[in-house]
Amino acid sequence: MNKSMVGTVVIICLFLLLLAPISPVLAVQPKTPQPKPARSGEVPIDPVELAEFLDQEVQASMDRLHIAGAAVSVVKDGEMIFARGYGLADVAVNKPVDPQTTIFRIGSISKTFAFTAVMQLVEQGKLDLNADINTYLDFKIPATFPEPITMLHIMSHSSGLDINPFGALAETVDEILPLGEYLPRHLPPRVRPPGIVSSYSNYDVALAGYIVERVSGQPYATYV
Image (cartoon, rainbow, N blue to C red; front, side):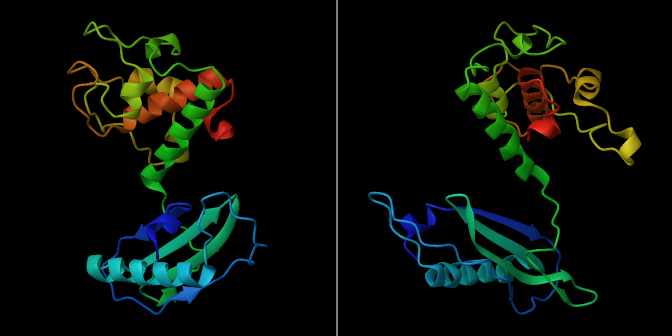
């Protein structure tokens, strides 16, 4: 399939990383949408060609990486044009993946939601990517270094905050703290100036989510 055709769609692939044999594909096709006129310069997507391309690519990746099950959805112009399950959702009982019902842990894909929310607020003129994030917080990031931490640093994981995974997980729902309580309580030290080193940080993204919450005036989960 021509890569320019693939580039016009958003493909979300959630893989269940279990070492197990691969079962035959289970396909659940959504209702075929009515074709829309192609925009100028846009290559129309052939549903059959798309399915053949994804079947080949996903199955090859699953075989190579020993992945038990996966689900793939393709959304174009606000409509789901492809949904298919691959492999097994439960190896023990040989249960295939159903793209309509099988649940995968989304993990860090949620970071794309946080940063999309940030950019929506930027478009609305409510957030400045280059402003000191202390502008939007009700607690202060200490001025360990002269350069302030900005949202651009947060979004590139280059805030310079230390990586501290302790306390990030809750064993029960009752132990989950609101962002406004969790973030100041677990604020890691600044160990380097911002913008120097990118280091993958869940805390940085939690900061972004809390800023979305404060700027939008809605709880983060409600906004998303």
